[in-house]
Structure formats: structure tokens, C-alpha cells
Image (tube, rainbow, N blue to C red; front, side, top):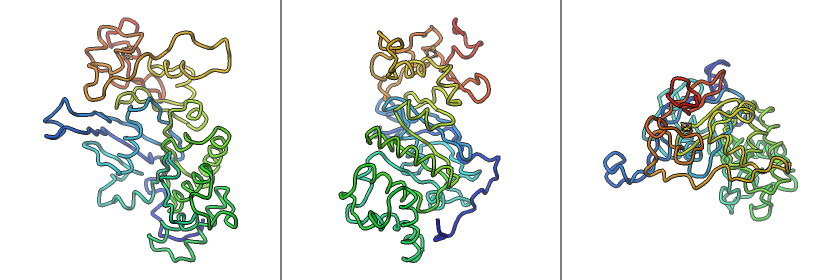
Amino acid sequence: MSETIALDPRDRGGAGTRLLDVHGLVKHFGGKGGVLTKKNDVVRAVDGVDFFIAKNETIGIVGESGCGKSTTARLVMQIIQPDAGEILFDGEEVGSPALDVRSFRRQAQMVFQDSYASLNPRLTVEDTVAFGPRVHGASAKAAMTSAHDLLHRVGLEPRRFAGRYPHEISGGQRQRVNIARALSLQPRLLILDEAVSALDKSVEAQVLNLLLDLKRDFGLTYMFITHDLHVVRFMSDRIMVMYLGKVAEVGPSDRIFDTPGHPYTAALLASMPSMDPARRTEEAPLSGDPPNPINPPSGCRFHPRCKMVAAVCSVVEPALFNAGGDHFVACHLANPASGHPGA
Ligand code: SF4
């Protein structure tokens, strides 16, 4: 990538510093008199979420729709403002004098699911990718050279694609343009929100492999949001499972898949389609829809759907408990001192 814009320090905090560190993130929607005054009208979209992403790591975020994963991404990106919480990027608080939101946004970019709606229909592919660097002061020539370089890197030969408009290319090609545009400001963090979910399977595989190549070549860090557990396993170093605005479980991918600690994670995994007839389940592992986030269940939010529920579960909210190494589980079963008879 050519040097077209002034770069922020690439590794301000050093190798040992987490790239993203999120503490106590809260976002409630609704309630005409304010989130605290009309409690019953409040949607608790994100309700006290803590997590981190190490440098050059991919964290996968999974959960049913409405679990808060996309809201978490938008809060991190400052597209919507949190009600509470702290977001640190490479050791600096986002929005502080040391790291204003504009500088942060240059270093953190997002790719959305809808490739067409994300693009300006009146801009050609090359103008789309050159737009960001132009806004940040690059010359037209430098921005265009960088755009062509990036188009080449994402597999769109500039001679064929640079002058086309979004409606003249396929969904997979549009998503490659979105990825090139996201890379145009030389970010360090890419947030991919269901970025491959709308693509058919063969195109999806190509784009996933492209993302792995780009991550390696540009030293990127990914926050990868998807409802597809096969995809998340393929992409992620660690996985965070969300349920009704909370973190249910977080840990290394293999650990989550091989020995899930939370009954919700186990049910999600059991609901994955299997090609092996011997592994097909007769009984639905997860019954019912997630409860309404306006008035979530007491104690553990999963208790009305949990097959392992005990008396303590509807009374006491489980905290994230260290189940060994980097594996944390918000379930009383994981904590021998919780009072759950199965713990
Ligand atoms: Fe199930 Fe209780 Fe664990 Fe919640 S805390 S997941 S209800 S066993």
C-alpha cells in the first residue's frame, strides 16, 4: 500500500497491549423519560459487556439475532453512543485527548452485510476506494494509485473493474470493493458484521480466504460477527458467545467447540447442521425464541430455556467465571461455589 496519508503510530502501546479493551459497555434503547425513568420501556440491547481483542487476533462473536452482537460493534465504532462503559484502543481511551474519535475511526473500519447499500451507486469502484484517502488529504493521483493497488489486492483487476459502478458487479465483487475501501485508510482493526452472510457458499469461501490473506499481509486484527458457527470456527482464534445483551461464554475456539461450558453454547453447537447421519439430533436443542430484551428474565437470562436450570439460576445472575486459561463462562454450573447442585 502506498503512503498516501499520515499514519498514526502503528503500535503505540507495544506488543503486550491489547488492541481493543472494552469495559462495562451498556446501551439501552427507548423509554421516553430516559433510560432509567421508564424502566419497562427500555430495550437492554447491550447490558454490561466486557471483552478484549489482542493484537493480530480474530475474535468471533456469535449469538442469535437480538443478542447484542451488532449493537456492540456499532458502539465500538462510535456509530451509536454507549450509555456507559470504556473503550480502550491500544491503551488509549477512545474519545480522550490522546485518541479522538476521528483518529480512532481511521484505525478501525467496519464492513457490513449489505454490500450494495454500503456503496454509493454514483461512485465508480476506483472513486469509492480513493474517497477516504482524498478526504484525509491525499492527492488525487496518490489516492488513485493506492485504490488500484488495493483493488488488485482484493482480487479485482483495476483494468477490468476500476471504472465500473456498483450495479455492474456481483455481490461478491461488491463486498471485495467494501473490503478495499475499509483498508484504504490503513486501519489496524476491521469489524466484519455478517460480512459474508449474504454471499453464496462458494463466493463466501473465497472472501473468507481473502480476509485471512489480508490479515496476514497487513497485520490486521478482526472482530468477526456472524450467526454461522462453521464460519466463526474457520476464522477465529477466540469466540465470544452473547445472549440477550450479555457475554455468556468466551474462550479459545477449540475449547468452545470441544468443551463448551455454557448450556446455551452447547445448544447452539448442537443445532449446527451435521452431514453425519449418526450425529443428527431428534430433539431441538434450543426451544423457543429468545425472551424479550425489554424485560429480561431474572438471574441468569437463559434460565427459561435452559435444560440444566436449578433454583439458584432464576435468583442469582452468574458472573463470568474462569474455567481455566482464557476460558470464561457465565453459568453457575462452572462455579463450584455457586450453589447449583450440578456444579
Ligand atoms: Fe442454565 Fe443456570 Fe447455567 Fe443459566 S446459570 S445457563 S440457567 S445452568
